[in-house]
Image (cartoon, rainbow, N blue to C red):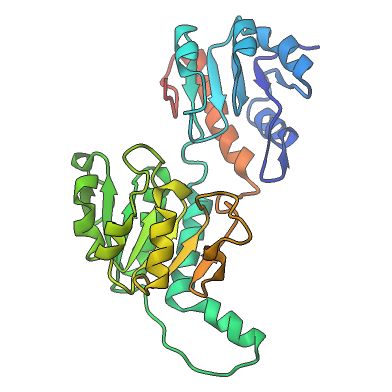
Length: 315
């Protein structure tokens, strides 16, 4: 077997093979030796030679064998599952896939907001039943959208909302950093944002601070016509509180790509609401995921050679 500069561990995402990843990397780095490990044995055999390893995770056995490893390029945006202490002790830099999902997930959010505002779900039901009956709708124009989380995805959502003439409120851990929204508040001020919100978009990570962020108290503050779009994690919403709000007509509608629990059991009450749309954690699907990821990893391979700053570095 070859002695690769870059080793791609076994991985698939959105129905795409790791071979797509390898093809994209070879197109960007024609002079680099890029190998794909197709079995656990090949991973163990090839990893001692690689300067960069790319994959979802790396266990202690592989890390012990990685004698020349300088960078682990995680294929996820989140890195909480990685052995970060061990990687840091080994002097290995770690990068993530932040930014890869910006275009596709922000498109999902815009589609969800328009669908709810124009009540396309009702249109679909009436078409299926062959019912010609006018019904009321809303506009995004002039409404207020709160975006919780102003990372790469949250910022992409704000960018795509700009042509719709909406007012935007951002909620983030460090409001002093500012952001692309019309105003930025901290998590301790979230109720001030919610009370003025026509639609709230959750785009934050799941942490101790954000778990059950939208709870009974939050749904009490939200106006009853407000729409919810969750592309963060299911645990950011207290599911029981959401169900209670829906049953009490305390929220206008919800568009959920993530739920708690997940997968959502077939007998869960959330399936039964006409004003709830559920997709199976599918907002991040993109046929060009590995293309975007390759842009980051290829640039970082070049940066290692020149001593320049590494993109998306988390350690």
